[in-house]
Amino acid sequence: MIKIGILREGKTPPDKRVPLTPKQCADLVSQYPDINLTVQKSPIRCFSDDEYARHGIALANNISDCDILMGVKEVPKSDLLDNKTYFYFSHTIKAQPYNRELLQKMVKQNIIMIDYETLKHANGRRIIGFGRYAGVVGCYNGFLAYGKRTKRFELKAANLCEDRIELENELKKVDLDNIKIILSGNGRVGKGALEIVRLLGIREVTIEEFKTQEFEEAVFVHVDFPDYNARIDGAEFAEKDFFTKPELFKSTFMELAKSADMFVAGHFYAAGSPYLFTRKDAKSPEFKIRTIADISCDIDGPVASTIRPSTIENPLYGYNPHSEEEDDFDKDEVITVMAVDNLPCELPKDASEDFGNELIKHVLPLLIGDDPHSIIDKATICKNGDLNTPYEYLREYFNGN
Image 1 (cartoon, helix red, strand yellow):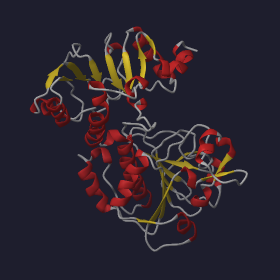
Image 2 (cartoon, helix red, strand yellow; image 1 turned 30 degrees about the horizontal axis):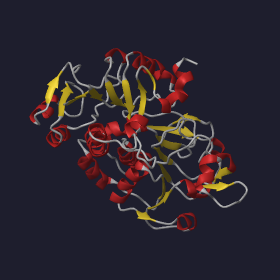
Image 3 (cartoon, rainbow, N blue to C red; image 1 turned 60 degrees about the horizontal axis):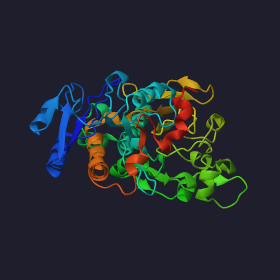
Image 4 (cartoon, rainbow, N blue to C red; image 1 turned 90 degrees about the horizontal axis):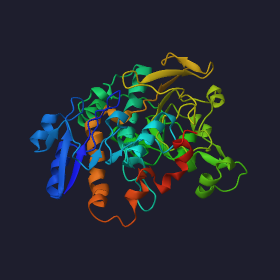
């Protein structure tokens, strides 16, 4: 019998998402009779304790008898239990200074820590994440921003929508003129954003059409990194070179920015890659973009107008390209920026359901049965009172250096 506990989220501000919904818990117990599942009581999660109880799931304040504990965000250090196996987003794999003590304490308490972010298929692609709903909500917020900037329409804030059904109903209010939209990224985030653009029925055009033609309706172009980067020496673009020798490349994003009104940024950015556009680029009279939904939200990074994250409560701010400072978001020369960095929290029920489906399909079978590619071990940050071998690169960080 494997005892699994669903943790109450303890981080501040609180996160309402869950790794498994009430129905998913019930389905899991039905599918795997050898699993004993308990949900830690919580007053803040998007599904109430009563909803879990109605699905026949046991609830308790104390789940210390469970072997495996699953949450979403970092577990407060004071809540960690010795000799347990934890699943959550630890935010330690990039040597984040604010979580060094968390990693040290897990090692000291002989905890096995599996980070969702490091769970990868044999081909190297991530197994699980909230990226799809970051894309869905981020793109929706982009149109919310465009409506507010132009005063053409008003959308209800995503976090005030009960679920995705209500959010999609809000899209009926969107009223676009003949704007041109860039959507970047072809991963989970980009594809999530694409769902919203498709629901709006916006016409997709080619890169060449986007750059050279005018339209009487709203159009968009969907691009990925090979479309807005080029070799500095003029040689042919090769993905392998781009990832291993990014210094050989330059951004060609300005060729698109000259024609665009709105940019939905759902791309993955690798360290060392060329910035899409710089602060100098944004000053250019040729830079036409005035609404940017930066779902990727890398501060002072590849999207120069993202100078800070915004919040769910206040999702918009203005970036003045001439002063390089924050300004009123609806001024003509100012870029309206949406850069919320915890977007899936705005639709916690739908995001949790999507996440839980992947967890049940791809991860739990590895825990219960065979794991021929050692996927779980490769995602284990620490075990046996030390860093696990794949994360030895964190040794100096762990030691406080």
